[in-house]
Amino acid sequence: MMKCDCSERIGIEINSMKLLEDLKKFFEEQKKLGIFKEAEVTIPFYVWKNKYGEKHEWYADKWYRCNVCGTLWEFEYPEFPAVGRIRKFEDGIYTGKEIVINKN
Image (cartoon, one colour):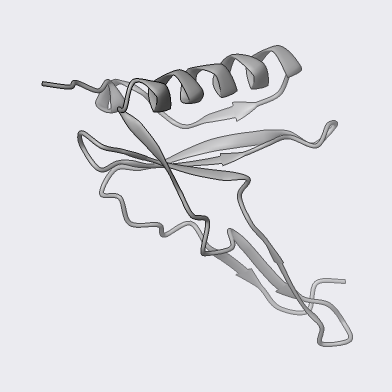
């Protein structure tokens, strides 16, 4: 029987290339072992309208779902100097959307 360590892991801010590479490697290894599978990214994590009323959406780079416990992991690669992040949704339901209206 497969086991996961999702309950022991938390979300994290990605602030270096080394950490990004380590995390990418970890997620790919978990995928190869059959513990995680890639899930289609269907919901933006950030939505806003500019001062002209044009809607913009930002999506995560990857979602991974744990085949053992159902946890959904959101992976947003950094665009340095901006940091990236990994967020954890234990119940497997994505609730991370942030909506901003009229961002200048």
